Image (cartoon, rainbow, N blue to C red; front, side, top):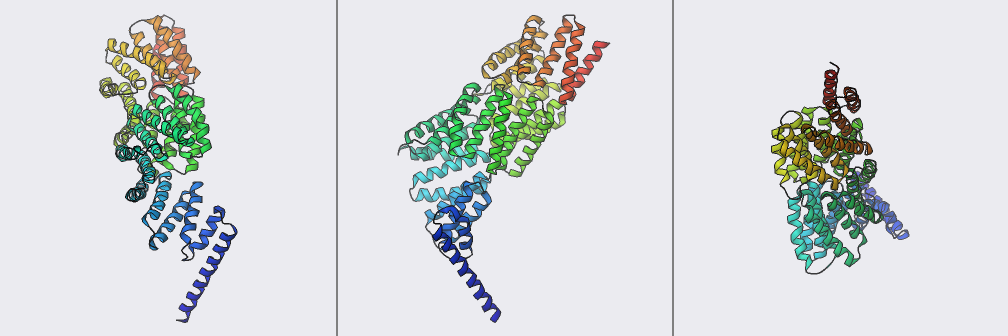
Length: 537
């Protein structure tokens, strides 16, 4: 009994010392600068003011993206407040903060639980501005969780509820969330309209951060609607304002999307630079799925530039991160580009596995953009494996959809039609592909020109094929895009042979073979080697 009493006395004395220390530091430094130390001492006591300082410590940790520390402080603060019988709106404030940090950390199911609880309390207490702010965050959690339709269904009624009271920061946030949800399901014009509405509201309330974010969303919509140069200008104009505002997520997103605009436009060095900056921002966030998504984009750029070994390392890291992140909408990005790399390397079984996994995930999460890319790559796999009819069946339904990425899809459709012998349709669609891609960026144009050269060669329109080939080669070298260059050189060898110049035909094949071997394009190298053997016979 004496030992129990003694231990109790020691424990009480320690709590008194912690309490004295906490109050002394708080008196000396009443700002939040030493909140972490003060909270530490208060957490060793049962003092009622402990919750206040734990929340302040959580705010400090959240501000520097120390997510786990912030969560620990907020959880303890909420627990103490609940035990003390705090009002529901006070607990809702902590739920909102917990949900926000969990969202940043990529733990979407947990984030939704806290955010839904906070939103319900705010609605019940008629604090609609707070409710709108939280529902906007809920929408963003659904976007990254891969449940965009649920997010749209949650955000849209809240917009209707808040709209009657006029412009506000929460209303702008809701329109921005809606814009982000629309991008995943491929409603690009609706995305642009929602972003424009957010910009209009932000201008009225003079919210520079929301003006900049709305500009980024509108610029990204332009990129997705086939205007990468205009979209790039809009996003680049917004980036300094976003950077000054300090929102890492919006900055990362802007850098990723300006990188994508540069990639589509064929400016691969700039695309790589922007995307590497985006990855650095995602690292500061401490969010695995955003990092995985960004690595997927970076891997695609490295692949185009011809750095296939590095691209594989980056993409495999991205895939591992996406899997570790759990449920999210980002898994399809590293999967689809790993599938493309495997396809070009000639590892067709591996390509088939990655691409079908990516397709399953894109369909499950409603990710239209990824689905179009995967279906186009699977159609190319069908063509090179001698199943062009399957490729046509895969692509024709995509072409009919509103706002379809025709610049991506129809060059491969023309190639498949050529392989089944439908020369008339192949020629018509190849011509459409070149015309459309001239307006939508060099990346797609190079691939469209290669298919057009194949069609013109089959039609024995050699002079036109020669002119198109010269343009395609120049563009591929300008980017540079070595795989496209090597494919063009293979087509040039056919034209040279038809012109009776066997020496030049072999020279073009040898150039192509060197590039294919350097890249690791096994099947293409084998075809070039076989053609060279035939030419020497």
